[in-house]
Length: 68
Image (cartoon, helix red, strand yellow):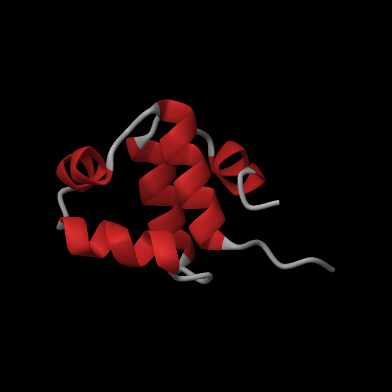
């Protein structure tokens, strides 16, 4: 089984949706440093992945595809 790299999911989804880290932080009601952590950590909680997908108007499955 291959593990999904959550940081790749975040970076890929942001690029696909053309959303900056500052903009994602605003949409997700969090700080830019938190988004930077999401962009660099390989692991994240499921509810965080769901939140990011929702903020970027993606399904969870679409979001996770960016990690492959």
